[in-house]
Length: 319
Image (cartoon, rainbow, N blue to C red; front, side, top):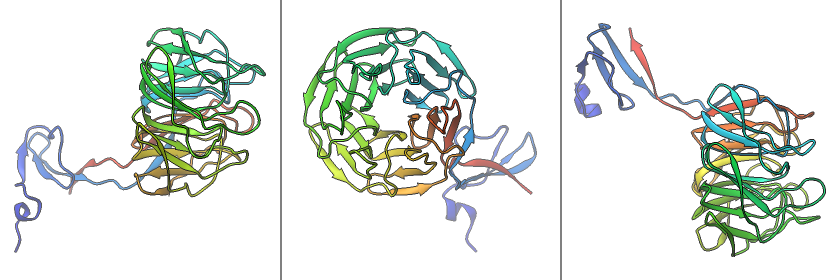
């Protein structure tokens, strides 16, 4: 008969407390509790209800590294400068943008973000604003004024913004941001507006958007040029989304009032659990494993927030 060590490569060990980082499938004995325990591989992706924003709005932007550390700013209707910070349970109002605007792009983290272009109905804006965790500062302008661009970036010193609209229809313009100014780089293949962006400056993903109607087009950025990759399963525009790079992303919601969620693994898209509130013109932040969806038009404009959690192993007690 095979032994536990032969199957799993480890012995059943005794601990006075549970191990800090147990391996999935590991079994151990907790001497304090006097029970056997097991690290169980959870297999369910799911959305759960988070704390509502203080200000209901659509056409806003977001930034953040997870569903416990995110930032929401700008939006309509009417154009607003309101900025809120999320800690995993509640939103707190912090210092406003200098210029109220909607249809803007957002990139970065909760403490180092960038608010990109947008409009104040009807003028298009060229000015960017940089967030340092406390306040917004106006920085260098974009080269092409636009509204509802896609954006990706690690922080307020390194970002990429792409597409958007200068009028009817979408554009293909892409700009690389160095913390001070934007430099035009290679355009993408299909100009479009109202899209989602994921990743960082050297490894980004541009997802769906309008041209002028909803599309399923996805393009991958490798720091030099864009390449069309596998389409999403459900064409849409005005969606939310984010991700770590061009091999790992999540998209959710979109026009018309969708609740569909899809996950990108670098090769293909897989439909996952739907959001509770179908909506468009929303914002998103986080990663494939820990994402946040907030705001949008449901209709009407909503303050609803939903937290996404991918499968994480959980500890269970045996017997």
